[in-house]
Length: 254
Ligand SMILES: [Zn+2]
Image (tube, rainbow, N blue to C red):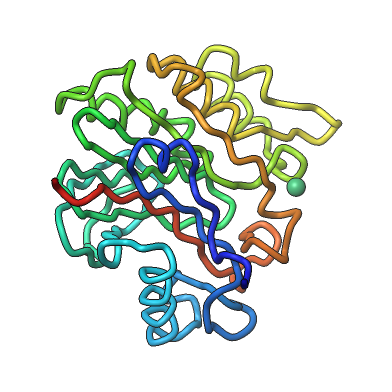
């Protein structure tokens, strides 16, 4: 059997949600976007991207193509329902509480965070780069879920692959802003003597600060910049980097 073209979130699937993080292989995009690129306007053809999407829907058993939005490293959210498409709207948090709905964020080094509440069937997909992390984007996403009836104690989170502390070099100003984003974040900044940061761990701390139980948080440890076989990386490949999708879908209504 061929390698799956994505990593499954175990914590989400154990609770009835389909959560995936795509890998490089499994699509038809040519170099340098080989092979499973989902970023349009980068140089890859829209036909390739559409083909990759339809292939992924079948491989991952998604209800439809996922809803996506224009990502601008801010904290706006977009509620989605049913059959997905590309929304011409700014949002780095996509949300749904409707059955058979898939939502996604695009990443290449930024951290994707998938959230779900098994009691209400509510989901969120969050695009957390360093700017989003500084803005506490996962805290905003959780606040929205709570406003719509989710309970902290039920919430599940999956932190996908992103640029690791080994490769994520930042300047002083960014380090200061990240440190201030949540309690304990200072321990996630390393002086080697270059300054490096652990985005996943800072976001995990923000989830804990928001009241999410530690055992309800899954962290998929993999550095996108270190592993060109499996991952696109904007830091590594710049404008030649493709984009991954992180997708979470609600189950059909029963
Ligand atoms: Zn690395």
